[in-house]
Length: 316
Ligand SMILES: [Zn+2]
Image (cartoon, rainbow, N blue to C red; front, side):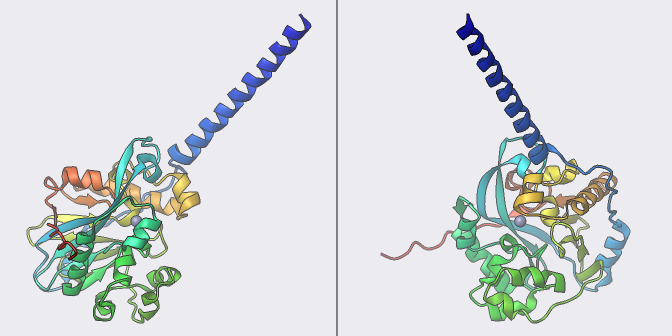
């Protein structure tokens, strides 16, 4: 009887400990991967009339198309980049963008090189796509960045003909701080920076919007094509479509711990994007890393995947 009683008390203590651990695990899951707060952050508004006026401010022909290419991919749980969207695995891609213009094109976020892709645990890397983006930068009239993280600026810094392309890049003083922090040999050779107004046209139909939050120098790119279609490249403020569809930021696991950002500012921009899209249904928001969403929706959004020529196989 005595032994049975003791055993009963031990089992009781054990199950209480399990319950406490389950509650703690549940709370950690909720806090790190579900919570999209703080709540009550006001929207940071986008002024579509100001964007359109800026798009018209520079004389000349507007761009004719937007194309993209995926350099690297990895599978990650959706909730890491969009809090509260669950543990379903999605494909996160490093996407480089090309805005077709009459003067050689504009490259946005050229992406990263194979060693950095490996360091960031990307499982697939497309060398032919890298060669294509390098050629894009050779021919481009401008090279733009949504922010200075390595998966957006790395391939620019590692370009084999860096000296011949560097002056096409628009790097703001705030962005240069981020690039220099990467300790790339080439990063130190960027001597020319350009301070931009909160909304500033850099080419006919191409407007840079300052949206600090994900990084101090983060920006979005508004594009108005010659046919009137409008797009915003959101950068990592919205890495996935649910970020702007639900105004939910990255998880706290990523945004507070692994890659800290100004989360309240990002939430404000996401609320602003959601409201902007609700008022302008035909405006297309293009997230920075949502490879699955882009693959599914590209045709409907009137953007296209750039054809990638396979590289010649190495001679034996
Ligand atoms: Zn990124």
